[in-house]
Length: 93
Image (tube, rainbow, N blue to C red; front, side, top):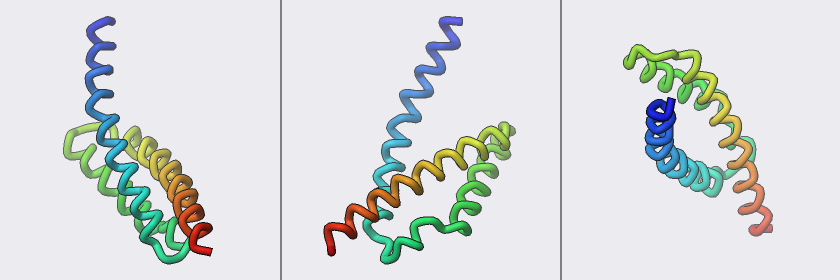
C-alpha cells in the first residue's frame, strides 16, 4: 500500500500544477467575456467533455470516470468564472 500511495502522490504533484494553470485561463476568460450570459456556454461544455472522453478512450481509460471529473471541474470553473466576471464588472460600474 505505501507504494501505491506514493504513486498517487506523484501523480497529484503532476496534476496540481496543470489544474492551477487551467485556473489561470478560467480567470482570463472571466475578464474577457463581454456579457455575463457568455460565461456558461453549453456548447463549449459538451465540447470539452467530448474531447476529454476521447483522450480517455485513446488511452483505453474509463471514459465515465473522466466525464464525471470533467463535469465537476467545469461546474466549479463556471462558478469561479462568474465570480471573476462579477467582480470585474462591479469595478467597471
